Image 1 (cartoon, rainbow, N blue to C red):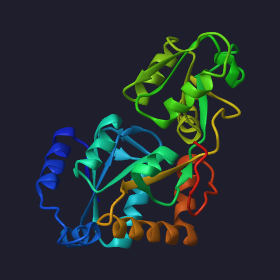
Image 2 (image 1 turned 180 degrees about the horizontal axis):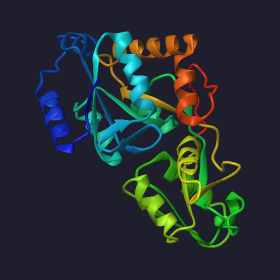
Image 3 (image 1 turned 60 degrees about the vertical axis):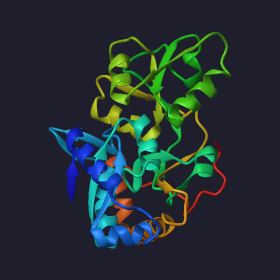
Length: 275
């Protein structure tokens, strides 16, 4: 697997891809097979799915796409961008699929095609360890909280805050690491993010953070996505077939257990998201 962790290198890769003739001479799967490379857009500030450690790209997505690459017979190239640039980058043809992963929502399903779900994405709160003022989700009422900019988690947090009494401020962060830094510093009382993400953060930094249970968000799932068009459909069909094979033979469950600490029972498809 070739990983473009450096932003400049990533721009070189997406530039060459965007410049390549797309046309209708061949669908996207045929193009990927012909080039021997699947280019995947993501943000490497979303542990445990994608993150950088000593300059090396690590996480669940690295291992899942490594298996997908083996099934398709191609190498995987990751492009690292700020999250609010990832979906526009897909639409601009800078890469062929988005890792993310992305919360499967009604609005996004109208615009994009999702793969089979790969993890639970229900939203919960992360707080500072020992903060007794936030014992349950509704305790954030009247306080200051945060979430990642342009994320489904942010929208769900805003919707939840709107149901609480008083004025609760919701701050938006370019990436989750900035939100976690403000939480650790006491500038906000909680961060809203998917349960797998904050459980991983709390596990890695148990002296600093704790998860607030139960999750406040509705039951939702993470998936990968691509453009919703005829050219992209064969590629996403092939990725779905690879994921189905990984679920059947236990590879996906093993990767989940490694990064989440537990296996996650996810449906084969999501046709009517809760959000």
